[in-house]
Length: 241
Image (cartoon, rainbow, N blue to C red):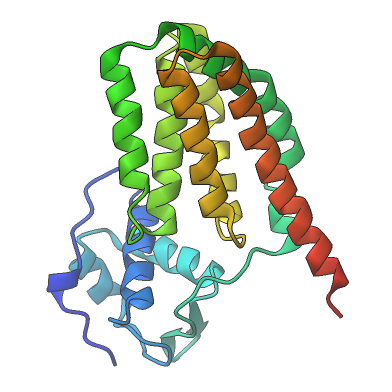
């Protein structure tokens, strides 16, 4: 059984505890602290070392297992089976429990281009600095996909706040959980993270330059780019024997 010391684990004290624990556990696996074939310590021990409750620990294990990195053998324990996340299934790219990705795209196209153009008109220096800070953080090559997705959501939130439109902020907040859920799956597509960052750079540069039309166009292109990446993945998948 692998001994996971406390040195590489940080107690989690934020909301969405299970997701935070899952991200740390995946990091331990991807950087080789826990290797394929290793057996995890019992759930009770893991919960103590991560500083969370057993229910949160159990949910985190299920998340990492769903990503193809763990396997539960009932009566034997939980084993590491891969140091890489599995590619999302085709259905996972299009349908979620309570919405479809095309529906989400329709809403994003209705809101985000206008938000970007309004931000380009109304952004203030502190808000501009916040956008630049988020972009700089997202450029870190050591950043996990989960951390990148969180910065992605943070960037879009910051853009909407720069509009000074309270109702638009509330509308975007209402779809934020859906955006986050979908982004965690789509980010695994080949090249998606690089494409996403390039899109973010284009949007922010237009907003900081107060180029209203360019900001709108960049936001729309950013969403269309995700659609193309998904379509390309689906096309390649159907071509496989």
